[in-house]
Image 1 (tube, rainbow, N blue to C red):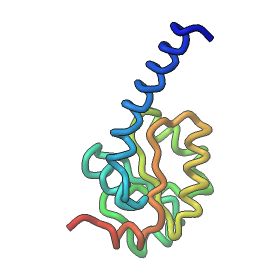
Image 2 (tube, rainbow, N blue to C red; image 1 turned 30 degrees about the vertical axis):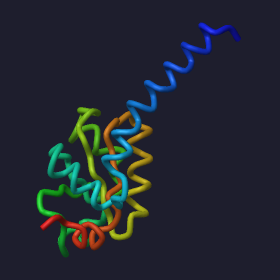
Image 3 (spheres, one colour; image 1 turned 180 degrees about the vertical axis):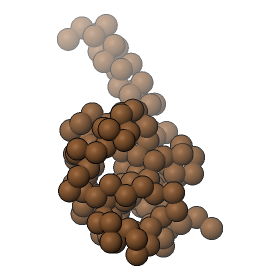
Image 4 (cartoon, one colour; image 1 turned 120 degrees about the vertical axis):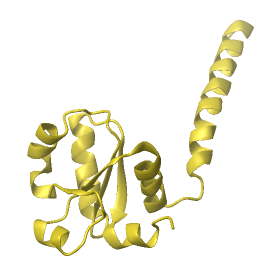
Length: 127
């Protein structure tokens, strides 16, 4: 490899580190629920509760919409066709929201985050 190629690859590496570091540093030390609240409060993310209707009725995050995991693949594109909208998903423990995350990712949604469980989000809500 000649010196010009080494210089180009080094420059690309430095550029990538320069882009990635601020993103990493912004979320460093934060758990998934804290990151979810940042998205909700700063980017006005859509909050989707993927629990059952009964679970949703028993308590939910203010402003959340209920699209149960069982129907999310069918309903999400009708209800929210913009695949660039920031979305925070949550359920009871984080398992169903992770499954929903994978479904939305497969459907082409770009800004999705698994916020974890309902109680986890409540415990980390900014005061």
